[in-house]
Image 1 (cartoon, rainbow over the protein chains, first blue to last red):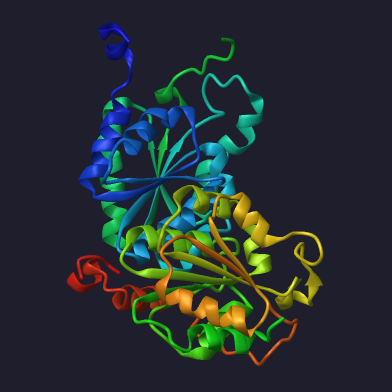
Image 2: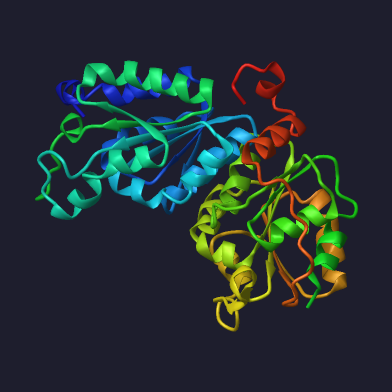
Length: 178
Length: 198
């Protein structure tokens, strides 16, 4: 990788990682996602963070509840399609008033090539709100760290479920033909 | 095959102080509650398919405590991917014990996938869980009870139980209360400091 290529990469995933570290997040559950690739890489490289690859996002909701029962803080990384997979498991969070931090990369809303992403992408926020998850949408790179830090404070300080929703425009166009 | 209340009583008769338990919804929650109303139990009343993952989260957070997930075949089948996730993590302090009667007892005893077809012990092995047991009799039960105090690698045990429906023993259904008492019993530093809402 050349220096100019490194400069071209967005910095917000690194800032998000710094926010997770500052909040003492020790378990990160994820279903692999291109938008989260850099953040997953940073978490995997950190010996103080246990990175847990999931087969489906709902596993991560239960993992986060367990982490809190064991006195650790967790965060879940997923794509918008994964939100739908979480819905019944979110009843665990609501029923026991667990803190929950979801970081959701959006698909199906801007420069989307694959129309199959639109159905779930377009209902992410209303569905999360119905499930008692507070949504904080971020459109601009310079707002990511601030919004994430504020949402995470709310989650762990008040036993509240939050989703930091990263707009597809922030993540950028996916290259479909390689 | 074993009667379920006999099995749970044998497994927990000499429960060590450090053993934390997550019980899966339905009969396993009533079974665990029937032994003792214990603050170290986190009883699920829902979240079907999530018991093993709740156990994994606790086990990773508290490497110096042993954690046993006690759940049923239907609950395990709904979250079968969790066995794969646990297999990748291989927590040395997590045991998953499945009471398998091959049916959905809460809903009218309809046959489950383990009823003549799916073998959960083989599934756990295929998912990378290195230590598995298939418990069918009192000797196996005694061995598993001993291991719950001493195991040092991820353990998966299927306990074959008879399709009986003993009287229900209902623990609290208040999720917040169950969470708070578990965190206090597990020695949560944050719970002791009182620096969160709970």
